[in-house]
Image (cartoon, rainbow, N blue to C red; front, side, top):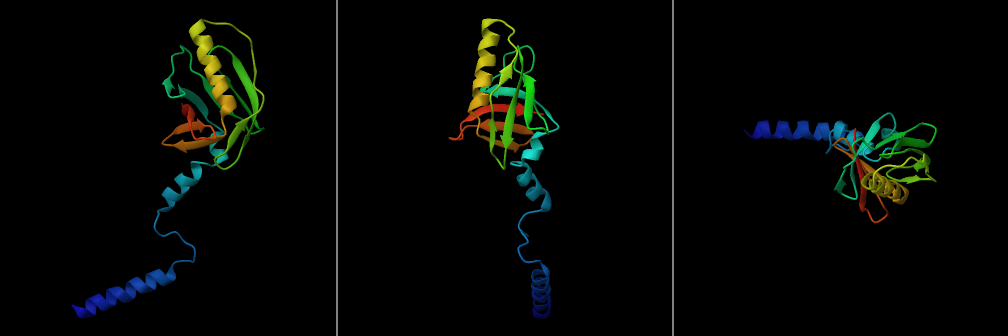
Length: 150
């Protein structure tokens, strides 16, 4: 029994010594990759994001509010009644939008109100995170402003 314990200890010591310095052996590679994606600005592009909530209120518009991040540093989308575009700046977990340009079509008072709340929340955004297929935009106080699904 003592011989088996000594052999196991030697094997464990050899395995630990073989690990490269700075290797995070406590988390699998897929967990590390998912954590990196949560704040990687490149993860924003190539997806049509559909808004599911504004200031934690569920969406009520008949047509989905959408957001598309383009490689040229612009974001385009549909805000419920109008199409819009704006420049954006993204870093690791940080996200801000420049002046928003939108078409000027009219709609119901409810739809216009929701669109206005959406565009105001977009303008207040300073941070983003991705988790379980959801994109969350928040302000500097980490208040959730907008939430999108893929």
